[in-house]
Image 1: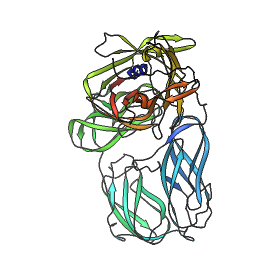
Image 2 (image 1 turned 30 degrees about the horizontal axis):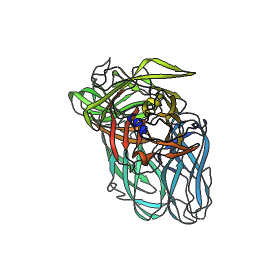
Image 3 (image 1 turned 180 degrees about the vertical axis):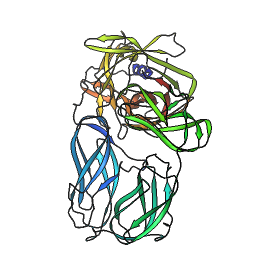
Image 4 (image 1 turned 45 degrees about the vertical axis):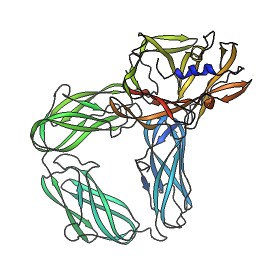
Length: 560
């Protein structure tokens, strides 16, 4: 037998008299649940600051605001706030009606006392992110005065980013960074349009002297070759060069049927925004070198696209990055377009479920990084009826016990995931049959929440026979909900998103109604890691000091 769930057996060593049950609890459907989105530094996304902030000038809520992104995992009402710094704060309320990423505007309130940079902490559910707001000195809310470095000739130090091709629309990757010298702080708006391309940026200069500005491109280039783009500001102008290529010409591998070959990378889950790991690799054969722009249609909330420059040649691999958030589980077929050539590929989107139970789904685990010590689990078609509840049946093959061998009975109700099991057989009661259920994970509560099972009462065989009552205590530790967790096995390294960590401990009833934590007595507790759309990805057995003794890690899975 394997390590996961075996820890129940050690409880037969505890001899405490008594019996009492405690009911688990559930939260209602409101308020909403979700997580603030941030970059690797903890800064809020999309990190948008609206309006101008001037010391001693009261904020106007409809103008002075910040925009943050929330990945909604349960609909309902929300309140998102910041702390109060320098005399003002931001707050937003409302109702989330759909899952997935949603931008929320928090309105400003109060009056900044002094000029400077104020670093706010935005809080929602159990998550936080940071956003910095710059306050100008009193009386400095007007337009800035500045000059372009290099005017009236070439813009000194200008950096042009991205690929440019005729008839290919510019994206957020098409930017130009310029240098300016500011003599009066204040607001600015810089824009230029040339040969179908527009570069623009507005904002506020808060420091005198040297500053940089990144102009964002839009539009579609109309003229190939060297484009010298004029950048006028007031009575002065400097220029920068954009090289516009002719578009590449070629065909997709497999066109017009399935893309051949195609490799889909990453894990796709309903309600989970696309990350850098989500992409597809396809193949093209190029007859005319140039800039390519290859994209797919949008299917159930997400799509793929890629741009770059390619040389003439057959069978070149191209990577298309995913954007958006899937809304529907199951296989999704995408149509790729490159010039007049098309092909298709399929992405399997997993359900918004932390313990999937669909028939045919299967998982392979290995123990303590030993590739030869493994376990295969799968969900089968038959179900188990227990009163009004229906449980999905899991089977397992550990290479030791002759398969098939039962691996448990599971169901989901809202955000609660239950196991039905014989507690007596696990604990070592005599007679053993003490069938009951417990909630093993909750996705509808915040980090820091604790819940407990009812008591599992029985008798430990003697001599002398001794009554015993045990219950389970589960906690999602602070900061351990909807996090990223990396698992390393013999098949490689995988980072799973939206993971809930559940700490599992045991309590015994020492006198009627009085329960005691048994962690120190047992020198043991466990941690289970559940990934949205995947299920159990890791289990750790720890001693009372918190040192990991054994691990069970997911090395392959298929959710149908």
